[in-house]
Image (cartoon, rainbow, N blue to C red; front, top):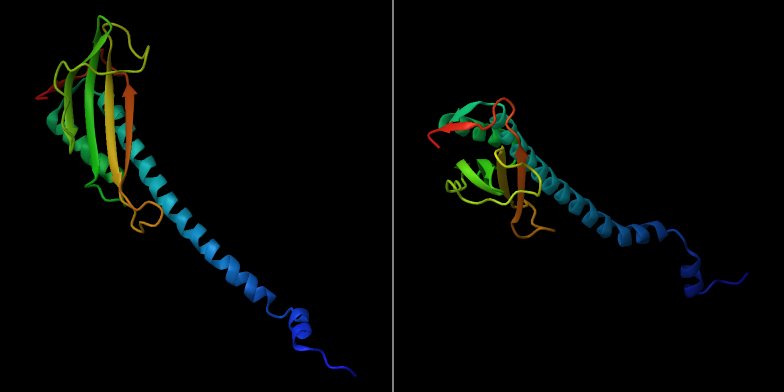
Length: 178
């Protein structure tokens, strides 16, 4: 009986193949896992911020008249929608815009952590959104997302969303104190 050499014994031994394959694949899979977890957190923050913008426009568009206190309460609801994400980075603004002679101008504006637009400021609207004499509620929101892991997104990522909605019960929503 002939004894096998060291090289032929090592090349024929398949006992450690699984361990070697795992050692090669595991780091890649772990990076994918943490990357997907971080991406999903950012995506959820972006979607919630979009919901805040839509909700603010929807609640304001349902009213005939709003006050600054009502708008502040609506902005607070927006902060609740962002939970469990930090709300300090959430900035909101709602504007009533009317188009006259083909030019859309701000009638009133109110912001939360965001500067209100000046009255009569010209604002760009998507083409054909409203006609002369019509008004629209424009809700804007931005959110500075800072990943807790900072693995794939090491810097702050700014999400922003603008939502347009026509007033539901009146031609133009009025604001007392804006």
